[in-house]
Length: 423
Image 1 (spheres, rainbow, N blue to C red):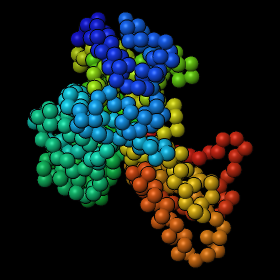
Image 2: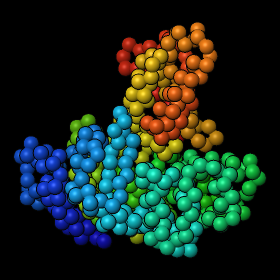
Image 3: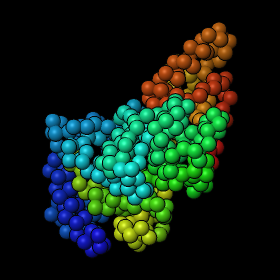
């Protein structure tokens, strides 16, 4: 689609979305009144800057259903992402939303070269996380055969690749490298498999890591981007030329802003990605601040697609960590620890990458009484903390109990996170 035609379509859909949000979502109705604007004031795409920003905190405050723009009886699917203090961000999909989501993911995986001739193996977990379902339905829409293996059990994943002759692998890039490591231990030669393409997302990864995945699995590795708040996977994805992620601009209006001044950033310069949904019925979002830093390129791609491309996201403006595809905030960990008797209010998170997988270790200061008491009390405390961590985070970190005043104190902001990973 030519840029002029695309922008006309975007404007029509933006105006419809603004009307829907204003009339059906109390949060937006209140914000519009505070800013002194009405839907009729949006006459051009440039007027999007008159609209209020939406943040993750706004979504948490609306937990669970206050951001929905339709009655719950019209919501046919509910997903959520983790929150920093136990409250998740909840998203709802109407039937039309699910059709749109399926179509957008189908575009992304088609751009990567997946067709109805492929056998797609999904290693994402299935549940409230949007990755597994999103890629699953998109692959089915293309006509590919889908194997919903889900997460974990790496030896079985490899066995499935061998027996079912999987041609496309879906998951995180770090897990793909782990699969390659286990293959080597099992004596499996990737060149003897049918695997030819990987569709990776859920965590940031560098070009160097991409090349390692490609070399060790003998595949073409493509990146895709999405976030549950605006849709899930399907916001953007790479084509076979791997020169930026094509954004589905007919469904998402994209801005780049300076995270400090909130002013627009020109093409080619790094800024924070801001997304406005143009077709979402269940939860229309206006100017959602993703906190992801990237650049935009509006020039047509060699593949022929004319939608703008975004650079791979490698950094953020907030303190969110991504560990094995799971979003983790230090405040989540802090909330769990401070609720456990015998734990001191001092901790440190250490992130490392071992055998291609992220590993999180939490150093926890505990009461000196526990070190002079029975060892069984420390063991019981560790089990209790791990259980609560798994419930709050969706993963189980390693724990190391240390005596009081063991962790370094700071005169300024405490250094809670030491990230030793090479992304």
